[in-house]
Length: 408
Image (cartoon, rainbow, N blue to C red):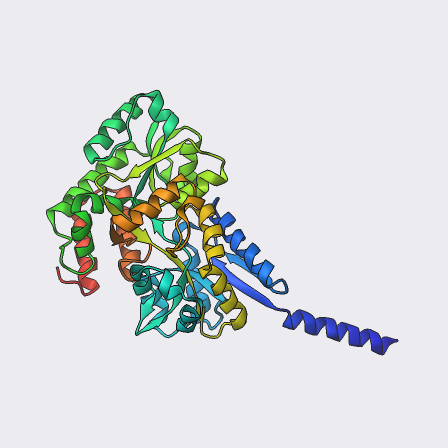
């Protein structure tokens, strides 16, 4: 009898040790993004019911905390089975060029993704003739969100220029409404907002030039952007240092603040809170420009559950996966063959703009510059929020570009 019991225990242990599983690492914990991730899990579980999903999320918008955890794991030889990474420099410079990833070109060929994703997206997930990750979405970073009821109450129109922004902000301030909601707790949010100011002052070509040396960081338009941003900061909530991006969006939902400059993951947050009294325009001066980024997942070398990862990547790139995820997340599919009429109004407008607006890469979300440059950019602008010294900050931005090998 005891031998049978021992055998059963041993078999149970073997099943536990060798049970099919997949660890999926991301920073999607806020409203909208968590729901989008769950949609992907639901589809995966339906297709592969015997696989246990380990949801290894690390809270913090834009990967503020997750990237440090991921780096420790990757360098320590303990990679997650797959992980969220911004397509572009963040992916290629940080993990591909350094030899930590497997190419997944075979999946693109098998699934036909190279036929249904635009060249711009294919280019940023490519290196040395291979594809390295699957983009699950396209986000727009340069959106100004506003509370429609507040604007209607005071007879205001959403601002499209900086001059209009300051006019609206003065009216709102006079009525005790926070003009611009901001959360800077995770360190990246102010740099995100400043990115849109740079675009507004330099235009698409001038902004792109900052990252390849065609535009100098000493340019008077950068000075203007810093001066304008310093002025904008006079209209933000006093507790911004204690709030994350989604907690800043909460001020819009609660009717305490009127505007917020944030990526369109804010839509997913609004949906998750059952808040639909929001409107949107592009950030001041950003008309006709699409500030783009993309979340993607790849196949790390040494992934413990390689086949399960490959199947998860198939879900990410599928029509079903991209539709279910992006409706919840507020972003739009990386695929171009999904009916836009299946999406809510904001995503439909973004899908149309993606095809006709001029595309620029988001720096704060890993598309425009190396991760080291992004980190220093973020830190300099965070310091600027605390001490808005235009001259010192501009010198620091010039020095960072020089250190990155970009002529100034």
